[in-house]
Length: 300
Image 1: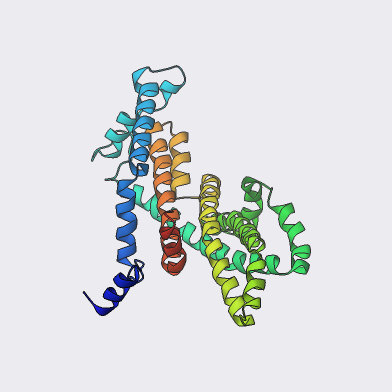
Image 2: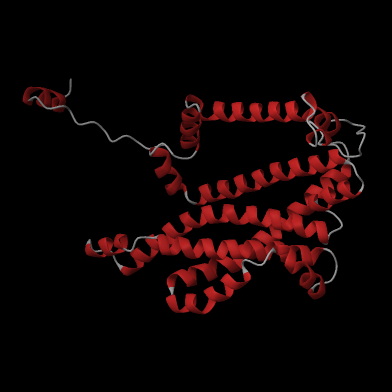
């Protein structure tokens, strides 16, 4: 036993222990994965998906209820989706299917980049300055409730071709969501934190750095909402003005009275949209390791 331990034992005190190291990088990922496996959350998610698929099959193909029987069931969809010779022309083996996905993803990437580039600085300025907010907020609140479909005629008149109008419409919808979420995020930061930091001797530039770190952490959640808004506005635009894309694929299937490709397009939109949101979340977590680490230590 060491001298320090002997002294602590003699005085009745517990020996000091080294501070516990917090996991970082792959260690943090492994910690969260092991915590997730031990929790009931993933199993409840799988159970929910299984119950949804069973209900879907029961209503469409099992009971064949009126009206609902016209919708293709999961067995019909999967048999065509995974077939090398689909009966209604669309499956994972048809090259045009991937072309639709690629075109939509390319448009979303451009629209999301433009909306973030324009919306985040404007939202920061609106949250930081009441004067700027007084000038710009009424204009945004007047334009924001206008449905994206109402902008379609103007977009076709302003821009030529199929590509630019679709990107403009997706950018517009995402821009409103990005700007307002950024502005609300700035306003939600409690100023008492910065006053307390000043009382403890924090310099002005340190408080500004704290503000920006908190602001970026809040922006990550707003950007996930923004990319979701961009997706549903893009699909609406592709249905009206487009030659490729998942929205065009859905509308084309409806016009040609083939229901399976229509549902395949809808499900593909769900998967691709979920992946894009997860990608934004992953990039944000990589940029904000300190924020992710704090949430992990809280079990969140």
